[in-house]
Length: 217
Image (tube, rainbow, N blue to C red; front, side, top):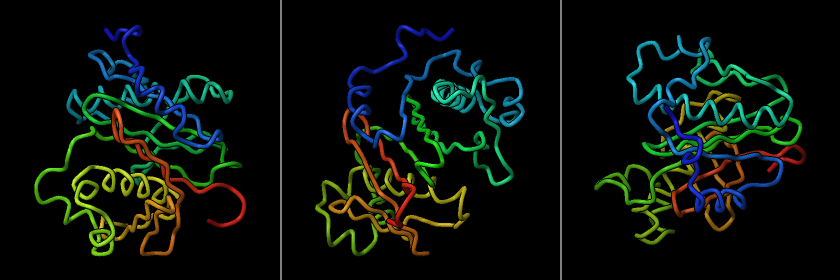
């Protein structure tokens, strides 16, 4: 059974509080045994063939989204997968879920404020050997020092960009198709989509990619 008294990391909670713009609501949960039971009955068929670890992570992430959606008036909302694999959010809402092996995060916002939204979380540890060259573009390898290239920051930001664009545009992208400008806090895809970026690097790497309503970014 999950322990509600130990499902938050105070340091991560403090970091997330300053991560995004006020239009984006964020929360997290330390994944625990029993979180698989947080999947609603209607959601469970989407994970019929998934191993326990995946059901547990997905239950934790969806429970977070439900907490946030309740603040917008949506109670006990089932979050089913669409045919594309994206989540079917309530009408008028955008959101994104992510997890690593230990922590789940969720982000939600009204569509009238945020047109596209993606989140990712990774442990604050280096990439495995050889992955930096796969993830970073030639421009990024010239622009950033080794400590950034070998961290999980670019990986996480590109994951967030993919999650933000895919439900809307459906573009099939790999890591070389997304260019990250850390100074400008922007991510650009090969298809010309531009996303604002926000991130933290401790106690975990958490990345947000989004498009605000209003003038094009």
